[in-house]
Length: 291
Image (tube, rainbow, N blue to C red; front, side):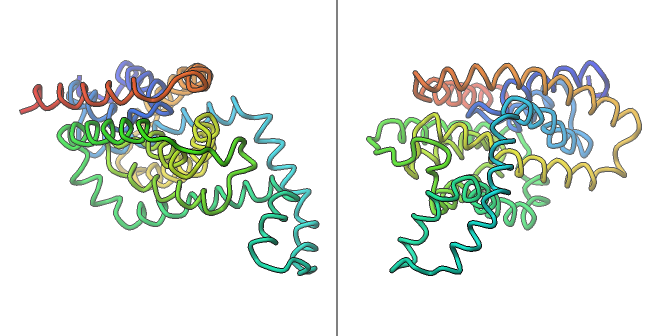
């Protein structure tokens, strides 16, 4: 099945929706399924990135009320923030920053997302072509699945103190460390969700907060990546390709919407260990199956 058509689009859409927000790597699974079905080449690698837009739209719909409050709150806090900067009444820059975060939590949350977005964006623009040409392979995915699983187990085995128990408590420095962790997800199989959740845990975020922050960070990250990739691939996509891509996006949207709700409920009561074991088993199985 190497023709990019509706049936394959539905299959890839289901895979994308199921895996985008779990710490198992949606890109890695799309590569493995694509190779298993004979769907490889430029169109395949472009589609495996572009189809993620459907899943990210699910986040926007699922978190629409919270997104609306954050955006409107940040807009309303602008004037107060400018006045705060002009006052200069705090003895130190650190004290001023803490006071501003308490007074303008929505604005600082939006600024933090921008800080977290930048590292992977800069590395991605620089190295994306090389990564797509050399690392979009089953062997890479198998290696990073195992490596990521070991990292998850190691982090879950350590004791940590959570300093951010809600999204508005995530500091700019914590956002920066999560952004650095997201750079690892540029390698297929490492998982954007897994990298940012683990980065959040190591930066001092509560597990649920780290997971939800990962969802919000996906908005600028995946939207930018899919728009950029789809625009670059416009010459290689035919009208039939765009139709199939649209079908895959719709399917991934519907599946991802259900997964988001289930994962948020799961993560409040459980660790990420089950996903680590799954990653290791999958990686070993791929090494055994692919010569």
